[in-house]
Length: 335
Image (tube, rainbow, N blue to C red; front, side, top):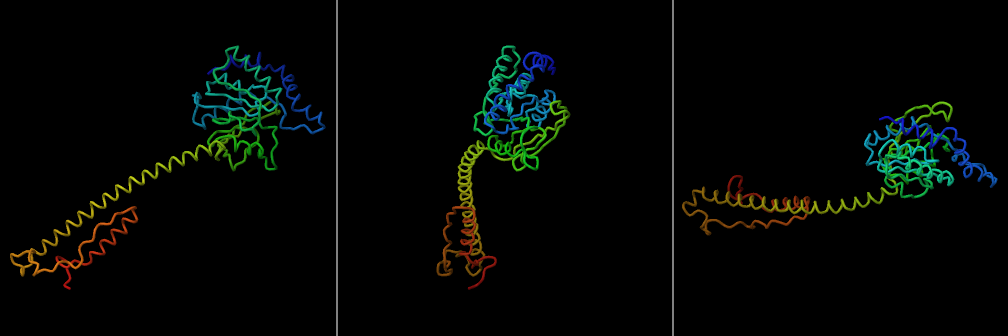
């Protein structure tokens, strides 16, 4: 697909390069001067930068491949974390039809600018995605927009890391916010491997850092705060289904066991009749003469009712043991 038209609008109207310093100045209003006025060191996490659109596009395409949505993104949701003036979020919404595109920006002045840019893009008929939300907030907040994210992007080149180069704070937040299985793209630094598995890396040009950047594509391997409730519900439902299945299986097993015992009892009785009929000393009297043949000392015990598979096996073994060694017929022992 050709992106020449949206690219021309982005570069000439929405986010012209000559206005970069203006957008940077807006970010410094909240992200720099507010700290200076309080005699505090400015937070480097609020450093403004604009990630190159071609490399962003490649990274998102690969993230969608890894997620499984590919080119058809109508069932997938994208979020840009630290979305600034909305540039990357609007580019994604202008070049693909997503189910939803979200941008979250902490600095209030930049978030307001992003909303203005969104209205401009809609007025120009630029967007292919209907639901686009650009909001002010942080990844430390339990925002509704985190609920169903499939692909997340964060331009993390200037974000604080620990001594191992891991985005510790961001990892901690996203481990809670995002659901398991989503794809998360970061730049130049990785997320905590305890929660995020790196599936692929890509390198591309980034003039903002004077050379190249590396994109890390992770899959979230741990449950998030919203997964926990959903999976617990699913487990409870599954337990009920398992109990019902076991009860049905137990009833069927008990029925089969009774049928088997009845067949065994009938076969044993038939063998006894056949054995008595073959005794020459009984002549034509068969087994009718009570004075000739004493009845068994112990009648065949009743079939026990089984309540589980193990109990049924034990009951069967006990029942057979009570039969003892046959007195008549093959294998009989004179007593």
